[in-house]
Image 1: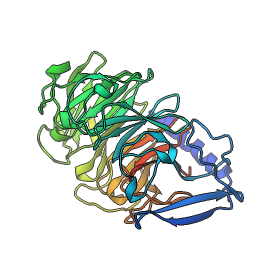
Image 2: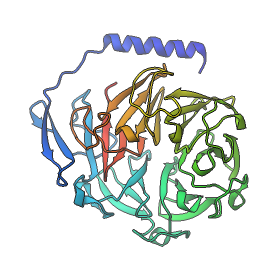
Image 3: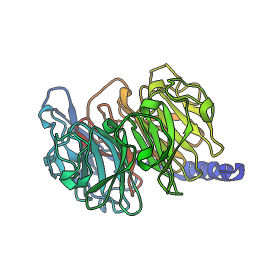
Image 4: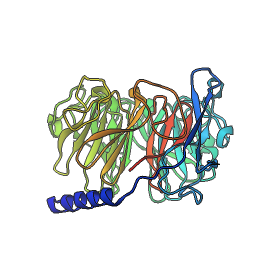
Length: 395
């Protein structure tokens, strides 16, 4: 993004803030003790009418303009609700849901590591198992339930509805077609760091994955502490990081260092963002390949808003890119953080140090959120506890 483009964006942003008037809805939060005794669920009321239970995308026709909050999509939060069961809305069950992605039609996809499956949630909140079989851990390509995974962790979906999944326990990248047919894109099931095509390449417990506009996949290769790229031809290269070294150094190429990176995002200007979990920082690699630190301080786990050098995070694990804004699942703080155009970090949902799901008006409450994804209506889909929720952040 050029200096002029940035100046124009800042000017428009400022004008919007000057013209916008705050919406003051009549909000009422009803607290209900969670069925495990430690989690609370809130139900929001707006304009003196109950908020309808609408998980559907891309928009809710009856949603008041400007409304914010946390709202359920699928799953439940009580202690007995863990499991992996298909169903609709609150009747569905998840077991440690991790990464989440949305396609253009508003379907959500969830990597469920403990059950070794990939789940699908339709715009109407209907949850099914797209690939893998609950509890059947392994490594096998195949159709639907015949496929086997080992701790799938993050995923991304392309414009054709094809999923790319980091199968972390198998150290491979998998491809899941819309009909559930699973194949292996890169890696061979062994831990290594070899560059090359397809099954010649090696990864070690890869976690994060994203797709850029040129058709390249970017992978946070967690066990190797590397940022890798898979081009449209399937060739794997190492772009940044020092193989096998857990560090926090800025710089270009192998001069840069990461520590257990767990997710990656890319914007339309080809800046690549790395969730550097082991360092509790967010890093950025620009289009020239130079890595810098945007938020957090290596080795410091805390919850402080502010600009670079001031902000602190605690073991963040996922990222979603929304234009100039970055949304971060700050897992150990049980919050969602936002980094804006000025690289200022703020807290948009959850209360630091308070792990528990509270739905309704913000800040609400979250329990170690892991997955975060931008949905077609510009809201944010989250995985937290054993539930999938929608975040409508304040702008």
